[in-house]
Structure formats: structure tokens, C-alpha cells
Amino acid sequence: MEVIGVPFDLCGRKPGSRLGPAAVRLANLEGAMSAIGVTITHDEDIAGPACTPEAKGLKNFGPALECVQNLRARVLQALQRGGTPLVIGGDHFIAAGSVAAALEVYGGDLALIWIDAHADLNTPAGSPSGNLHGMPFAALLGLPSSTNAVEDKQWKELEAALVPRNKLQQNRSAWLGIRELDREEQETISNLEGRFAATMYDIDRYGIVECVQKFDHWLREAGAKKLWISFDVDVLDPQLAPGTGTAVRGGLTYREMHIVGEVLHQFLTMPNCPYSLVGLDLVEINPLNDTNNITALTAVEWVASLFGKGILGPLR
Image (cartoon, rainbow, N blue to C red):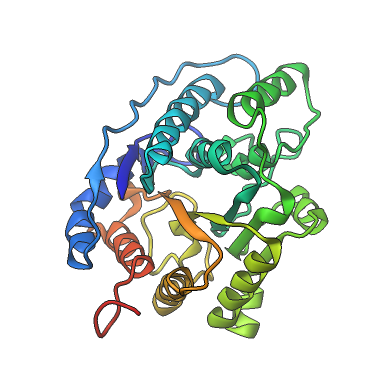
């Protein structure tokens, strides 16, 4: 596993998630992975671009574009040499760069599951806040936007830089744990052909295990061979993970969180599993809102479950 820190938080609601990579390392990520036999290497963090005020257009567009382009290049190198990147943010916009790199390598074979309270499926035309951290999924899908001339030009520039050839396919797009969507996102996600979405309503009604099983069935039916997981800590209930700038009440519980990682691990390690994990994001950890680094500690525990940590030893 190759750890890439991205201390970037210029696209979110609140500053502070730039401290996320350091918080995760201090939460003993390396020790947790070593205990289950996973070797990690630490790549150099992506340098944070300076915030340069822009008179028009999307907020902090210049620094954001620079950041995701640099991350895209770094993740692309890791994937091409056979590594499994763990990208630690930073606000969730950085995933536009990491997933774009995976799309460059795997194209239509790649599926993306967005484990998040939010769909992040806004375009500039429909975004209530104008914050880019609510738009990465839309950019990866190549959704069109029509607003003003400056923002339209920036949106096209972003898509051209990230997914010039291989955009994310609608039937390779999945969400788990979503519960706070804007009107445009509700309409868009309802109209995406072949997508998968397990909302908190679905989790409450059917149970978390059945929802993950449905995701596995969907992924097999879709025919995807590669999987990227993008995990935003705000998918968890704020009582469990207060250290985020995007908290929404009513999220996953501690045990639901772990069962997601544990069941995904079991599916991924089945002899007949037709898909493999190629990388993951861990984002929106904001130590400024946290208590005793509990959110980073919880995130590290989830990554350990995903890679095979079990109560009675390694999961089989």
C-alpha cells in the first residue's frame, strides 16, 4: 500500500482537513496495517498550492485544479508500477484526481463506490454553495454544466485535465450511506442509467449486510473488474466521528462501519471474485473539529477492517 497525503482543504466548507494526513499517521496507520501483515510505504505529500483570490468563477479553482492534476499524476505512477494507493485528504474534491488516474489506467473496467453522506454530484450550474468539494463525482462522469461563461470554461478545463478520454461510466457509479442531497443531485442520481445507490433509508430498512451484498451483486452484473473506494468520514454519525467539516446526523454506526469493511474484504478475497481493489481515498478528517483525534483513529480502524482485521484474527 502506497500512502499519499494531500493536505488540501480549499474546496470545502471549513478549513482544517489539510491536517487530515498528519492526523491519520499519528493514529498509527502504519502499526495497524503492520499488525495484519500489510506493508505500507509513505510517498511524499502533494504540496498544497497557495490560495489565490479569484475575482470570478468557481471558488479557488486555480489551486484546486493544480492539486488534482498533481495528485492524478502521482496516483497514475503508483498504479502503473502495480501499487495500491491510499490517498489521505484533505477535502473530498481531491478524489477527482485520484479516481481520474485509475480511469486512465483501467477505463471502463473501473467502478467507483462513494461511501459518503453526500453524493458530490453537483455541477456549477446547480450547486447552492459553489464549493468544488460537492462536484468531484459530476466531474468524473463528465456531466455538462451551463451557468456563466467563466464557470463553464473552468468546468470544461477541469474535465479536460482529469478525464479527457476515459470518463466514469454511469453503470460503474455507486453510493453508500448518502443522506443529504441537493435537488439537482436527487434528479441526476435518479436518472443515471445502471447506477447503484444505498441510502441511509435503505440501510435502515434492509440492513447494512444486505446493502453491501446488493452492491457486490450489482458490481458483478455490471461486469467491472476494478474497484476504487472513496471513503468520506462524514458517512459516519457525528457522535462517532466529530472531526469533519461536513457532519450530517444519522450516519453509520460503529459496527455498521466495520461490517462494511469486513464484508467488502470477504468479497474481495473470495477465489471467484471477478473484481479487485485498486485504490482508496480517506477524506474530510478535520482535527480542528475533533476530540482526542478520535475520528482519525476510527478511520484507521475502518481501513484495517477493509484489509482483513477481524475480531478472532485475520478474516478468511
